[in-house]
Image (cartoon, rainbow, N blue to C red; front, side):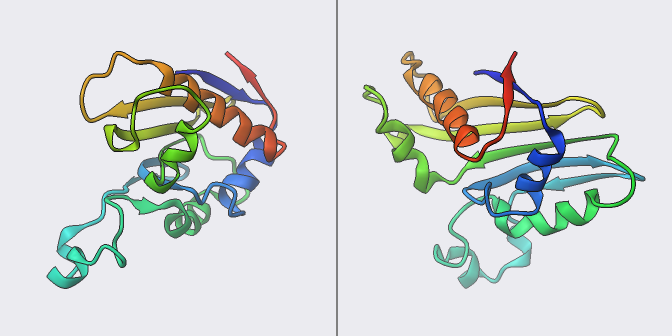
Length: 167
């Protein structure tokens, strides 16, 4: 797990909310504080779907809503003349990309053992911080995946020209 301070908040927010740069993620949870505090639960709502739709893995491939789907809603809540007083997004890498993170290292951990590769985006009114995390289905002693995920996030940011400082 690492914490990174984003040095250009406006540039980062443009990439997060107004581009496809983060569309390889899903939203677990969001909290956005502007004139109200808006809470979004990224879990797909079973009651919304018919049984056929719920069981159709092509229509609903993940338990969480993709960032691509929810991004316009988050953007509409944040845009305006005032900067939000705070926000927090808990993002998970779409599972289809997990194997590509693992291929960059020497580990016996398989994609099936990984529950989530997490990126928390947190803004407190002045500082925007990214925090990485990993979650597994069972306890795993091997910390290689943590390092691989940390490095993958740094490479992701570097490739997109997003500047940061490691905290």
